[in-house]
Amino acid sequence: MSPVKSYLVGWAQFRKNPWLLAYLVVLVVSLMDWIVSLSLVCHEPLRVRRPLRPFFLMQNSSMMKKTLKCIRRSLPEMASVGLLLAIHLCLFTMFGMLLFTSEKDAGQDKERLTYFRNLPEALTSLLVLLTTANNPDVMIPAYSKNRAYAIFFVAFTLIGSLFLMNLLTAIIYNQFRGYLMKSLQTSLLRRRLGTRAAYKVLSVTAAGEAHPEGVGVKPQDFLHVLQKVQLDSDHKQAIMEKVRSHGGDLLSADEFQELFDEFDKRVIKEPPPRPEYRSPFLRSAQFVFSHRYFNYLGNFMALGNLVTICAFLVLDADVPPEDRDDFVLGILNFVFILYYLLELLLKVLALGLRGYLAHPSNVFDGLLTVVLLVLEISTLAVYRFPHPGWKPEMLGLLSLWDMTRLVNMLLVFRFLRIIPSMKLMAVVASTIMDLIKNMRAFGGILVVVYYVFAIVGISLFRGVVVAPGNSSLAPANGSAPCGSFEQLEYWANNFDDFAAALVTLWNVMVVNNWQVFLDAFRRYAGPWSKVYFVLWWLVSSVIWVNLFLALILENFLHKWDRRSHLQSLTGDSEATSQMTVELLFRDVLEEPTEEELMEKLSHHPHLQLCR
Image 1: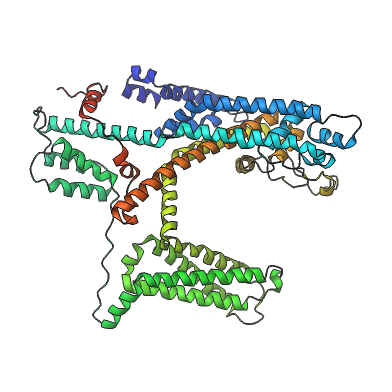
Image 2: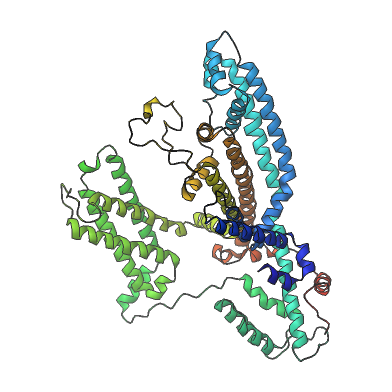
């Protein structure tokens, strides 16, 4: 693959691209490691190629490359705050070891022996306190003896957690402020450049020789090329109709560009026509059941169903499952499911089957209704109709209690149908979905980081943490110190396999009780294990989470402001929901000039316009 790329782009261009050079290096290292694995019959202790696999994912994603470039650009500023944090930690560590050292007072010795025994322990305790995970545990021994000691811990938290950590978030946000607009501006330039290059090529080949400047492209030639291109059928059809509307006239550069603007629009499919009924009664029923007030009634019934489930959860909270009488709840669920089925049938009657399925909310609603109906029929077939004292023995795969829980969970999930009906909530939900779609590169980087750290963690800590078996020699849980790894029974948090490693890394990234992991792996694997977990905390919680927060703020604020602006102009929130990100920000982006486009085309290494 690498020789093919070097041949296609040229060796001179290949040498200038660091990603392609790194691609070649990774391939060579992976091949050498694979040869070593074959020579050792796959019994080698370490496989170097495993942590290198995510490189191929990043190398093929331009957005991930761009994101990594921005992260690298912000590293110097983040390093300055990191240096301040390191100085802050070191100074307060020395203050703490001097402050909590005493030969006379045993109460103060408890603080020293627990959290400030030596320099590594003191640094670890204050580092964890920086994330507030061990607050107020680390303060209580000294505070119980003398309240004035609280000043030390409050000052450390104020300076470190509330000032320096938030300063780091502000620096990352400031570095990435405008990142979205810069990306869209670059994307717009590339799109315009590609469109103009296509226009120039087609105008040259339209009649077999170069046309005078500004003559244009023949519509039939454009349609001929369009037929050979793999595009979305809706966009292709819209572009073809627009080309045919020009007749046989040659397309100018501006008209050619307008054709490609169709890609920035999401084609809104017209809903299928509603069935036509001759009966006045059916026409009246069609009007009633297709009205929005009928949807409001359905939302009200879903809310009532949710309230009944919540009421029974509160009433039966202290009742064991075997002593609960599910008669009333079973009857209510049966009635609500019948209503949901009736609502589905009436909407199909009013809108037609195709019209009903044209709305995603109806598909969601109908699918859950069918599943609930199947579960209810299965419950009635196995356990009969509800009656007082309805507590039959378990029959089949699921008990009556399990069936009831599954039905209730689906009913609660069905309540999400109200989101499209609430305008403000719908706008927020659609904005969040757009953010998720347009921030896949950052999710990809998180996947890469998780994968690399999980593989490294498996190589370092596999089999280190072993859960006690049923042997009587295993220490009792009550003998372990309170709050320790053993007492909390965190045995499932290990690096014995890939899935367990991912969950363990997630729990450390959340930084709740992550001091327990630091202490346990220090005892089981050695003090050097702290380096791995602190490095993971820096990469995940400090850098990536703050980066993600900054980008969410930047994207959400821009999109929210733009949607509000466009909604005030159009008066319709649905109009903005059908725009791509490029079209949403089109009026704030700067169109490249004709001179800029022609200059870049004339210096393009793979395009020769003079023939």
